[in-house]
Image (cartoon, rainbow, N blue to C red; front, top):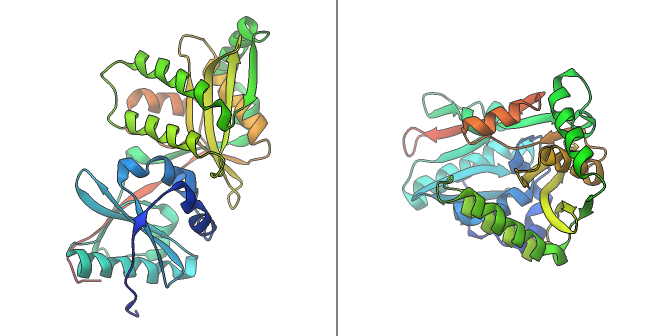
Length: 311
């Protein structure tokens, strides 16, 4: 294992960083939502995310959540993963004086690294596994398993189909989205999940930079008023859509099913897989995601070095 002599220089993730970072996102198999740039951009302020390009032709990450410095799996080719991983172990040990920790490692990376359990504790983070769905099933809602979803969709169509219009959203529609978010956030009240305001801030940042970012957006207008919208991006290696954001007026039965279906039909007509991210350990969100009958999960793991200096 060769030690790196090059000092890593970490800098904040910005919209313009996509030109540097995006080529690294598809170098090895990865079905998690972290396999696309937009996920990093959306949550970069929440996690104080920073990146560095190493001589090993990898993107290295550092983040700080609630005062704890952690890393993430390097973006690199499969054959470079071990060297890149241990480069960050040395950085944390020697530069920061900390044992190395990765908060959310994808299952494939954990398998490739095959870390010594005496030196690293590897544990699945059950609440943060991503839900994976069959793309065609989500576009059609066909079959007995999705019968209730199809019923909700049909109920929406009976009441609103002549009034509803799907539109591909672009930068100029940002004010419609902001107005919707104000109404949606007000309906949530004060007792909300900790991450919610960071998510809304991230959506604002996407809309302010959507001409730079590789993003797909769509909304449902009812009598000219935005009542639902979704934001996603595409992982070409996995032929997978990642649905980062999906929000709808909860008072309109079937609207969530309608935006879900229409967004995939219009923006991701050929994807085989749909990643609808995790449930954050929230029981209501878990039930909602399970009700769409996932075909699998992109599991994630915490990786923690047991002691500084033991690689």
